Length: 277
Image 1 (tube, helix red, strand yellow):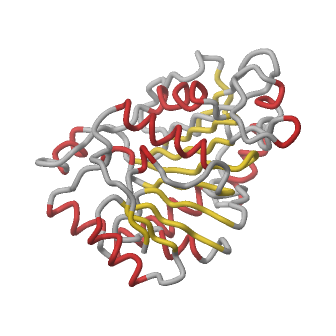
Image 2 (image 1 turned 135 degrees about the horizontal axis):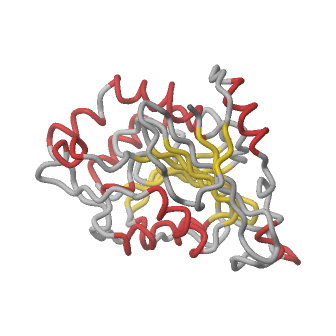
């Protein structure tokens, strides 16, 4: 197990939360409901980084789907327990806002119910920017998190709770330089985004509007394709297309909301929004 300089970008959780995150029920929820959904149709590649795995609720599922899995954990006792539980996983103790990995190290980076433990939006953005830096061109960021709610804040009494606003997340990811951003909202928040491939195989980051940004793998994924994926997962519901402002979530009492965002132009971002009744 490697050790790097550690900061406080991710803080400790209270005892109730710590007990839940280490429970078999939480691992089953992630592995049966969240992870299959957020990775559906996504090529994780051969080498993946998991940020903030904690007790490893997602780790065992992920290491069965890539050749090599690395895990970056701030808490040293948690990292030691993770390394003992998953000897095939390369566990490093360190700060996700200041990763020690070289540029372009991973085919995919994952973050699962971790970001709301980061105390500020600035630190969250630093972690996302570091994820982009260590991704190889064409690599994918996959993630999930809890939605803002009174229940979430009450559950985090005595520890950090800084939830991610879904509509703001898509803008933040684009501003950092991610392409082909998709954000979905159901019982929780899930998201994917890609690092665009630049001409000549450069490992730099393409700015929004660059041709490579629009042409990143998955950038032209259509609503019909997204609908087909959900139908294959048993969601036999018709997708309705909305003309509302991109990034906004209109209230739909009793309905499930799905926001699909993708880049579709080399000149300017274009979005489509779908909601499932």
